[in-house]
Length: 457
Image 1 (tube, rainbow, N blue to C red):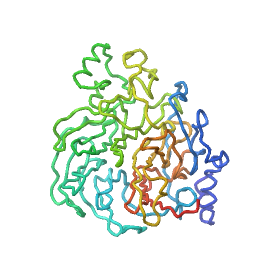
Image 2 (cartoon, rainbow, N blue to C red):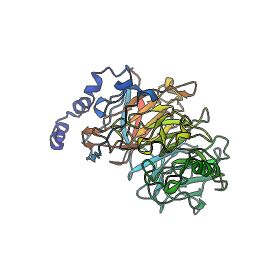
Image 3 (cartoon, one colour):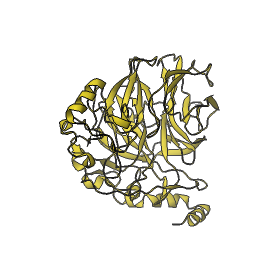
Image 4 (cartoon, helix red, strand yellow):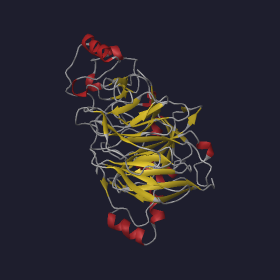
């Protein structure tokens, strides 16, 4: 369908039919039925609210070649809204300048990283309101801000903000709309320049440790000088963790840990190619990563994932992936690591570009997400660039049982793809407001949507 034809249809009042048409293939495949094995894969045309998937480590296809296919962002049609399940209402909440990661302050204010413009904004809204009451600039003049964290958790005195190469903190008191003083640099050299650029932040539940995610500079450790097993093990012993990357990726592809003042630097978890979204389950205290895995070995390999990460845990990159699968381009280099990589909790369609993960803390206000979903996670997917047919470009729900992911995920917000190669948005940031509604930021057309539950399903 051409862009002009689409606009004519929208102008004729057929937007609903267009959006429904996008999910027609998926709807025909029984959205509520759990898809497993090969049926769990697919591209954007198989997406629709309610589609459930479960991919396991045993389902991974043999590595093959791969395609590079970026999507072009097109302007939103008048009246466009993405598609949520029946019983949910989607509305435009705000427009910012390419909003990315979002964090909820203890008083309910939403802090938003405008990564490109180098700003952190604050959105204040009344409970149940469909629009902000205030949008203010908390800090500006930053280089690629992304991660935001409050310290301490109760009555915070600081707002921590990660830049691409350092971590700063601003003096703060609850309710501040602007930093009350200049930034203090806490970690002067977080990482080397280049490569994956997002640096999310979160404090452990006890407040003693600041965690910072740092993605790799390479795809699969290519062009890294080969060490013997003994040499690699000696390096890992020096770093204090199995699977520590070296060469250009030294202290990258992992989650780093610091004391709140920036001292005590160490590697917390290793072998994580690009943990874009880092967050803590507020109930269990478990720390989670939403991870972008490696590229160029197939449309359905390697799955992105979201998982709990453990202090001292190793997740495979670059030599192994999803447990006991060896990276074919590094075959035979680290046989000693076989069987040591932790299998992630939830595997997503490959190349979906999982970004931010948040947890549904619940709410009693009208419009709050369903009570049965309290404790579940939501993950924003920015969308693929290296796959023959696009994947991602949606928000999914990750069900929990006893505070642990079940391994399934369910499409929640879809309809961001207009057609192969053209998209209306790229979901990236999430926040569950104190009233229990969900905010979704997408940085392609710079829109923040608000989703509320109206019942009826």
